[in-house]
Image (cartoon, rainbow, N blue to C red):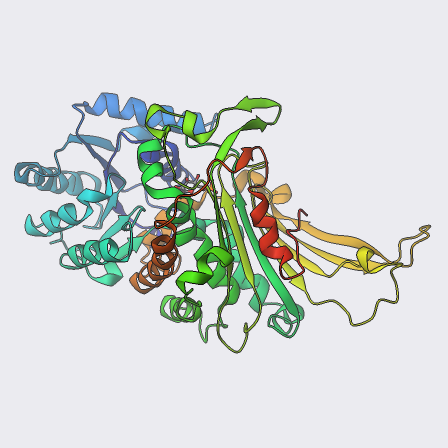
Length: 491
Ligand code: BG6
């Protein structure tokens, strides 16, 4: 990459002492600089309430990078670009002082007036910060100004709308980058390529040849120290409204006419518009919620959700969701999209299984039970790759046909250099590419769908806990598929 194409930037991180900044943002910035993806003309301003000095901040940054990459070097030089500014988001004076600091740093580091504001803190302040930035002239610059917003983007459609209109009063839609970190994952980005760059898949990618699609994102971790946020949110807001529905959109969208942000987003939006809204009486039939009780994960006993912290003792928040979705358009009429996600499950894994319709006659298997439909599995994480299950006769085997697996494992090859989702997304924002960020219309349509489920759930007390930690969720999640003659593929 030539020096000219490397973005120059001043990054302002609100919530600089927080977990996300430490775990994801500092290591990602380090990689971008160290790999020469962005210019050496960069600086970072860390903003948070704590009274840290530049030195303390830099030590923290260096530590977090070291933690992520043991062999990181030149950390002192890297961290010297980081400056700390103790900040109360509600005080005007804080913005006045910040503006002064921004000008000084822009002179010192020659960042071409490009300013990236990253909101990695409590969402209740997002609107206020965006407006105060504008009010205090921080958007007036010779370069660009962009705003990255972490989730959650609202709690339901009404609050998301309110937040959006506050932010839009200060920033245009094309300056707003709403993070969904799943869109930064290599294999999520690959869904589109696997589909549209391969005739053998794209020609079959419809209701004539596909019987159902299954998306699983399971986690082994529990609620950790996020109980305050999580208990208010639950799995459906935390994972389904954003990550799971984004994967559905990518799997179901029509090919874009061009690979531009607007074209791709507009195809995804159409899918979300075609997502069948459930009548209240259908919600229980199509959606299953769960909460984990105690159990065992990888040989270790773990406590149930209600025992994770004192304030969760009476909690009725779901830590698991499974659902059956329909997309009412020509391509997908009648094909169920099954999704499931949860905490404290058997394994940490995200994968997509596309099950193809079976051949009409069973010539090659002794019984119906042995028949194995063709499957395409997209492994999102921790394995990154694809596997195709076909039937063939194995040498020396008695059976006429047996499933065989053709697989490609991407991380076996590129593991060391696979960029983190956050690294890709930060870079995309710096070059103004919003394709892998969520447009407001996607956010709004997703909330509309989620609200219709939550409205029914809130009327009825669930019978929790209903799955053991270390399992694949409540029994009802399997029944969701059995009703249609399917089962979750554990492949
Ligand atoms: C986040 C959720 O958005 O995604 C977390 O808030 C969840 O609760 C995480 O653990 C899962 O992300 P990943 O990349 O580990 O699958």
